[in-house]
Structures are given as C-alpha cells and as structure tokens.
Length: 100
Length: 329
Length: 177
Image (cartoon, rainbow over all chains, first blue to last red; front, side, top):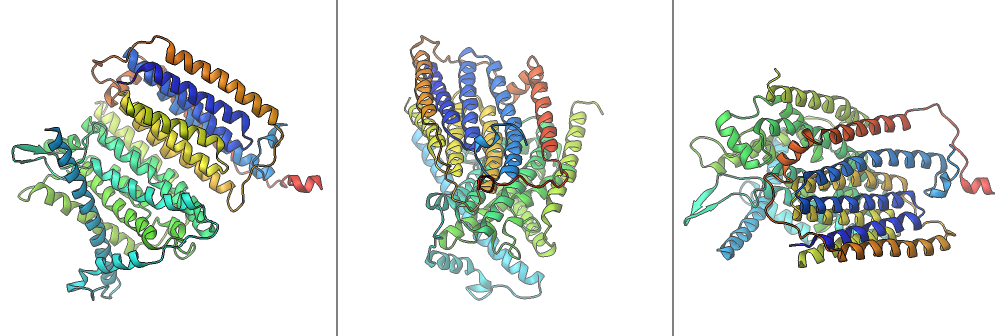
C-alpha cells in the first residue's frame, strides 16, 4: 500500500517543478503547460487525501480542477493565438504592456 | 491458480492481437475487392484463389520497403508517432466483449481481456489518445502537407469527439452501467438499444466515421490536396503501422457500435462469437460502401456540420433520454 | 511500493522534461507522460472515474488542443527561444522553488500521517459514487464547473470573433530597424 505522505511529497515536488517552469521559461505555451502541472499536483494531493479520509469531496475537488483546466486552456490558448496574430512571436515579454 | 489466470490472460491477448491483425488483413482485401465491384472492375484477384493471399503479398512488400526519414525530421517523435497510433488502436479492443463467457475445463472464461466497471470510459480514453499518432506524425515529418494533415486531424477529432461522447451517454443512462458486458446483458432482456436510441446511433456512426478518418471525413489524408496528409513521409513498416491502425480503428468502432446498440453477441441459433463477428462484418461493409459512394467534405463544412448539427442534435437527444429515464415524459 | 517509485519517477521525469525541453512539442509530450502517470495514480487511489476523466479530458482534449496550437504557431521554424536576460530570475526561481518545494515535500513525507486505510465505503470513486456525490451534497460545485465552462466557451467566441480588418502591428524586427 502506498503511504499517503509519499504521495503528498510527490505532489509538492511536482508543484515546485511547475512553479520553476513558470518562472524560468519565456515561451507562453510552455509556461502554460507548467501551470497545468501545478494544477495536476494539487489534484493528486486531493485524491490522495480523499482516499485517506474516505471522503468523496476530495475527488470532487479534483473534478473541479479538471473542469477548470479545460476552461482555462480554452481561454488561455485563444489569448495566446490572438497575441501571436498581432505580434508574430511567441514571447511572453511581448504582452508586458497589456495593450493590443 | 494465479499462474493459470496469467497464462489465460496472455493467451487471450495473443489471440486478440492475432484476430485483429487477421481482421485488418482481410478487411483490407475485402475493401479492395468491393471497391473493385462498386467501380465495375475486378480488384486484386491474382494472388492465391480469388486473391485470398493478397494480404500476405502486401505484407511482404511492406516489410521489404526501405525505411525513410526526412532530413529535417525530429527523429524521436517521428519514430514514436506510428507506435502510438497502433498501440492505442489495439488497446481499445481490450475491453470489448467478443462473446458470452464460455466454460472450458471447469473455468469460466470471459471473452475480453478486461471487464472493468467503467469499460466504456476506458474505451473512449484510449481512442481519444489515438489522435496523437496523427498529429505528432504530421508535425515530426517537417513537411507542409504532413503538418496540414496533422492539424486537420486534431481539430476534426476534438470536434467530433464531443458529439460522439454525448451520443453514447443515452445508452449509459438507459442501462445504468458503463460496463460493456452489463450493457449487452441489459439488451438481452430489453431488446436492442438501437430502437430507443436510433438518433443517438446515427450520430454515433457519423462521428465514428469521422474519428477513423474514413471517407467522407478523410480530410487529414485527402490525397487530392495534401498528397497523403500526415503519413506523406512515412514508408515501410512505419507506414504500415498507420494503415493497420486505421483498419483496426474501424473494427473497434464497429465493435463498440454493435455492443452498445445491436446487442453485442446476442442472437439465436449461432454461437455468440459468430454473431458478434457477423454484426461487425456488416458494419465494415457499410464503411466500405460509404467510401465508395460519398465524396469528401469541404473542411469548413465539416466543422460546421460537427458543431452546428451533430453536437446540438446529440445534446437534445441526450436531454430527451434523460427526461425519459427519469420519468418526466 | 515498487510501483509507486516507478510511477513517481515517470511523473517527475515528465515534469522536469516539460521545463527543460527546447521545443514546445517535446514539452507537450513530457506533460502527457506526466498526466498519464497521474491517471495511474488515481486508479491506485481508487478514483477510477477521475482516472478516466483525466485521460479523456486532460490527455485526450486539453493536450490535443495544446498540440494543435503548438503545431499551428511553430510550424516550419526553428523555434529556439530568444536570448533572454533573466539569469538572476532563474537563479532566484531555482533557489526559491527548491526551498519551498523541498520544504513542502519534506514536511509532507515526515509528517506523521494517517496510513491509507482499507475497507472503503461502497461505490467509492466509481461512476455511481461520483454521480451521487456530484448531484447530491456537492451539487454546487457541479453547477460552478458548468457555469465556468459555459463562460469559457462564450469568452473564446468573443476573443476570436471576426473583426474588421485591422493592419497587423509591424513585426518587432521591422520596428527596430
């Protein structure tokens, strides 16, 4: 049987990797993927605790995370594509001024 | 006992792959012969009696072909993509029950590799992974036609997957289970789900044709505009992997349609497994018939049809089924 | 335990791969590897519906959308990132992340936690259990997710609505010259 705290440790490690990814990369697509990884790490910990406490609510939280990710990726990719149409470069610094 | 189980599982897996590969070879032959008849010509009939050994000849030819890789290709992804396509195509069949459980030597043997309680969802999960083979192959080839084919494949499959998922939800609600064997057993007592779910079945079948990239939805490999689409640069066994994956996907979606809507292995007189194969064969014939009959969609019409016709229709029928099952109407 | 270690290595390897890969497509592939490893974790943690949802929604739809955009935007170019001057930020980020993540991981591993219990409630984590929870006590979350998805769909349509032809902004190189 998997010990709960090891899974929580794994979740923390994945979250940290995702955070590093958001901070060190300049390609908005890769930053976005790293952010997805942070979501996933949180979902993993939720599911682990749900299993530990025999509570379905933890799984509902993971379900929300999956739903949120779907909504977020739709919007985010639309923004990236429309920025790319204007700027023709994939660089997050292109949008540092937040105007068309 | 556990050793026996493992041995049985391995035998079943090997048998399943053998059946699927044989099914692929003879579906391809059937397609070529039938297309010949549809077009008032003979089709391949030289190798063996009536052309029955043609798949062997084709296979030998594929194995002996040179394996090419374009100079600018991404080597790892280029090699990985056909493997993904073939692997996911084979995996989906693991949950489809091919027949009623049989009893041999005091053992009850289920005619599927696995019988999970969420079998239908697992089948959908694997088939939704199949598109990676197409997209990655198109991207890794560094060829504009391949790339266009891959991009088309991803957009098309995401769009049609929604309608496909919604169309089978009605079956799930009526049977109250996502276990494929349970769905077949429900139909044993209540009759084929095809009758109450006829519109859902039509939507499922259209989206299934689109998911397998068959005519009239074969935009990702449209040979008149994109050379051969995502597999333009592939040759030899890597090309064969894509080819096998396409035909096995055809067999798989037919198997799922038979299981969900046409009572799976159920039928009088003949053994269950024969009934299953007969029903699947009828579906394969319809696939080939459609290919010989219909011209290809234009891409914007394909998208409009998927989002503005199939999805709302599936949604409305889904809501109607929900109202029916819950007793509102 | 061996299974846990193998899966954890796959998940962590995928995670590290995402942030070190040069090409966005390779990043996406590593992320898919990570997601599939987590899906197997969900099955081990008896959340079979979530495992299927993870594969269907995350790997089957979200990542395909990512690949679609990546292949569309990076088609036919050598997509090396421009030379960047954030060495200081990189170092800070690395140190901070190792401190925070390592700290969290150590606390998580060392903290005396409950063992994962046996003897689960009926229908735990399967389709029926999830449905009963989502339509029963936790209905508010289901409604919230539904509303959010609807908003997102409308938002995407608004963002990409056909607009009047505007002259595209000059490319960076042209502006600088």
